[in-house]
Length: 229
Ligand code: HEM
Image (tube, rainbow, N blue to C red; front, side, top):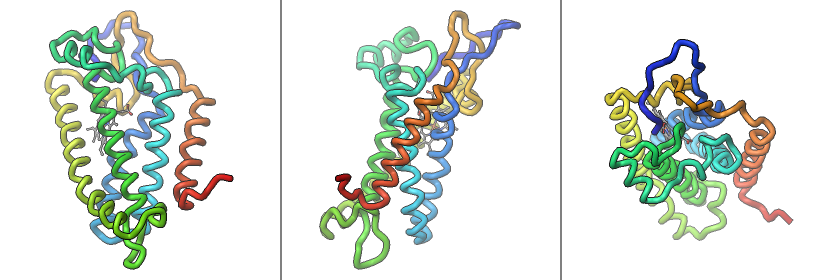
């Protein structure tokens, strides 16, 4: 999580923390996960499958963006070893980057992205071909294994929910401490910080590449992952 807001000098510009695509991906998560839950509760399986594939594409984008996106999107910037996490927990704010995820926030980001990927991944193989809708990769596994995967897919949603509740509790806890993490995740900027310039403009070419790779992957999976040769 980023640092507490410093008093704003009159002329200093705001600091850009999060790029637009990362924020778009982020806000799609609560929306799509709510839709996934609703479609499952109401037996709208065709829609559940389609939204799941959209979520897969967005998650794939976020993973690619973690390698070629702006500095604050990169895993190399925010995934730190236990030493940095412990130092951060002891109050050493220099253990993490000036802007972007703190060493602790970095791990919670990995946990949330990993849990969503696992949940979507299980869904791809879930279902029973003799009784309703299946994920697009269901034919690649036997009926018995698909059955176990379906149970796991259902159960793991509770783990994902638990992580989301923790995530919201952490954001609220920081807000209570006077550290507003929400505004930068909405508008992209935070108040000025001495000596910190923030991320630059969106790297469009790399953004197109990341979106293209993610869309291609989601489409390939949607067609049942046919052999590429
Ligand atoms: C399904 C629900 C949600 C999921 C799965 C989720 C997931 C994530 C992930 C993966 C990140 C890391 C961003 C990145 O690097 O890509 C993040 C950051 C963040 N999320 Fe969420 N989020 C959810 C809901 C929310 C909601 C409802 C709020 C606001 C109340 C929120 C506020 C934030 C904020 C402020 C950050 C930035 C934290 C920081 O500065 O380190 N999230 N979220």
